[in-house]
Image (cartoon, rainbow, N blue to C red; front, side, top):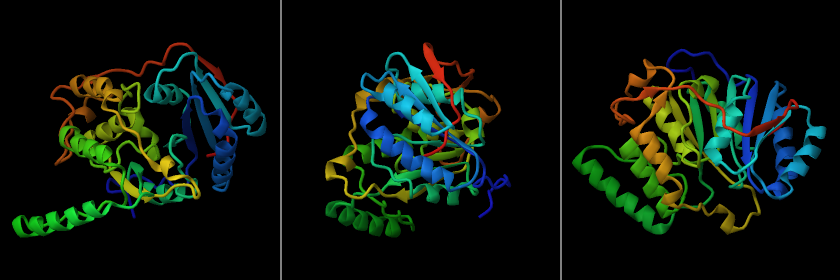
Length: 306
């Protein structure tokens, strides 16, 4: 399917993968090897940018070994923990390819689902994976059926059923973000996002923590980028506890308030656009430039993989 705005196809373009980690050294060897294999199968240039967000375990030692194996592997380090959003800002200073893929090791994402994102990106600007590994609970299915009957009777339309269950708190959070910030995705905080590079060129990431994932979606929607969402699974054989998505509002409140009250965009023209049903982030968005995080050391080696 062609892009609604006539943008060129990009699914075969080189890609920059961003992988923030903190104290996850035990997972690195297997994860990096799997992503390297997956990205090499595309037979186009890529880089894997790993941001070590102040790890205290053996992450530094393991990354040194990995860079010797994979020549397109890039490591950026924070001396102290700064957060997921801060890690994304740091990685953005190094991104060089037209496609950008963001992920993490906090959830058992699979490399096989990456194909779904590539298949969708030509027709949109940002595509995100909905974590659908957990089935919907019976009470939700019953509630959905009842509300859909009422919606059809009262207003003549119905809502599609969610592809999976994220947890009650997470679903409430996504509904709130839809109402307050105009977020049009059902799993805004999925760290499995593929986007055209110009999406992140439209605005700085203000959030230091995990709220950065919601911020990216909200701002991209606000400047009239086209968004899509596809269901994704999880690694086979992982315990049920690995599919549980922890949620604490206090981890997001400060960043939410910063973005809602004082949203920043690079392009004042884009920042004034609206997107139909979406709610603007603020009545008077301001323009700013991305500032590289302080105390970042860089070890650069071209990196392969995802």
